[in-house]
Length: 249
Image 1: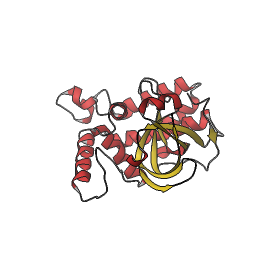
Image 2: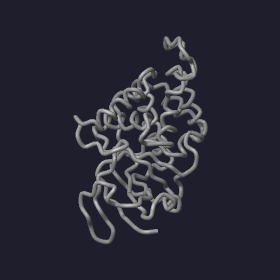
Image 3: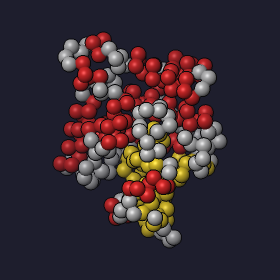
Image 4: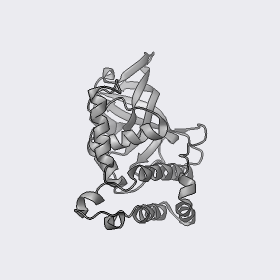
């Protein structure tokens, strides 16, 4: 999926404390796998067994099985893809906030005041999304770590990737500095959807934002685990301050 994209160099990748140490067996199995497809199967199988995703009774659950088993990393990522302001979106934004210290800037409405009603609503959705799950945020730790592992194997010399996002108005974003020739400094939400296809981005707005995203900020992409995201060449990227290039269609 990434072979035709534009990459640049950047510093070494980020690591979440304890993930490699707690899951040594996973990375031993990944190292022994012969292909990306095999590594993907190893990863899926490991999370299924480690977090008892298909055996909720092993976690002490005695109620309706269907509702419990939906609350896993795959359903969370798919939920984001359908609606980034959903309960699943709140879980993912909360995970970024917890692991990287970046507060969300938007969840259905602007989040500017941590004591305000909008932020309280976001926290409630996040709590509901985590309730009754089996260490869902730890599952997300492994998703991010596996994504970084795969990117390092497939593109060892790459540190940035050019991604695109279709928008209707730049004013919908927090613009920190307006520059010349369409280059601006903006504050992105703490997690964002992009696409690696400029043509696909054209379908979502009248203007195109192009961003050089460090690979360490890629949480997930459509080619990582086939079948989790359907189409759109979608990337989920951690946000923060970014320099973007704005152009018309």
